[in-house]
Image (cartoon, rainbow, N blue to C red; front, side):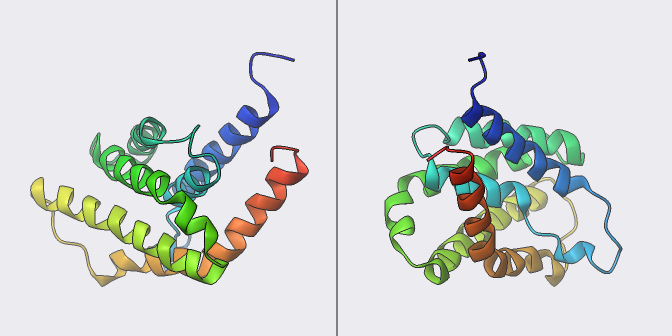
Length: 161
């Protein structure tokens, strides 16, 4: 087998897909509802593979998101590092919940990511966003059960248990 095994390729594919979905153009009316794809995929992998995906992965993914989205360098790196740490530390508790309760825990992690980004925006003197800034967290809450089931099914069909 090559240097990059199947599990690593699948993991990289999902991360690149999340980054792509983050910068994909959307109609103006729908852009406020864009889920936090990168944060959702990071949370998923931190819950499923906490020994492989952690704070360094969150930081690296955050730097990549900063670069592709044109955000302040380090903005997403900080918030995704914190989210990765919390998801990794709480993975046993969160995975034990039914999907509806997992969605609430994921929603709290999404809120933490948004709060940290808001703090950085304020610290750099950028204007305070509108209430629409919080809509992606609600979309992530509603999306999590299906998102998690889809990735679980793909992961298991690719024999990455």
